[in-house]
Length: 332
Image (cartoon, rainbow, N blue to C red; front, side, top):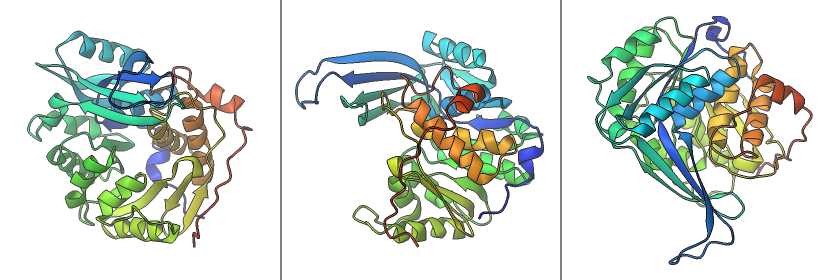
């Protein structure tokens, strides 16, 4: 059984989240997708962005949360800040810049599974370490820092270094395989990361290993252990319907919960924020991971990247929801 979480869980300080804020445009096909032609679909607009989603989930789960990021000087930016603040998140650290607020367009299969995702995040991509020098101040007194890889590598490096100066645990969310690859040069025992949370494709990008045809889970565990040698204390490997494996000195497997899938957008964000929220509230790793998977299951049953009614009460009402079989593939 992994040892208990570090001291920050009981410190009571806020969690600081640095990452992307987007307008999510989600189009779900009414029938199996046919490429090269127009497909009837249902389209919705909602607040999104990995960092913003994490922050809203955390706030709805009773954790004091500060958000760092950038939005444009348009109506989308104003709306994002307003909606996020209404959920209980401190958005005073979010920058306003001239230009369009970021957007994420998801094309969903009839089943709700993601077919293709397109992100347009110029303002976030243009940030430099000098632009975000003011982000160091909110880290003082925080319980932990969560960083998503939508931020440019030099900004991520700046935040990791500032957190290290304060002895602040950092959870690093890779976001996608292309963005995870940009993080690889930043990983070092000299710049420790408390938690990395990749899926299979992101694990391959972070480790530099070709895992596309690998069916043996022990190889995935080896790749995760490689990341631990690169400075990650814990690696939470997410495996979709199969659940997750927390890789540390020992392994902890957690099954996913049953769900009627409506929209998979935001499932990973709900999982990570659910884990961090319950660790912050003092839960053990096994209990926190069980509730994290429940957060993900409840999120994919509702439209949008964040379930508007996600709360401790909703989780309590669903604690007995059945788990899916883990079905390991020759895990050690």
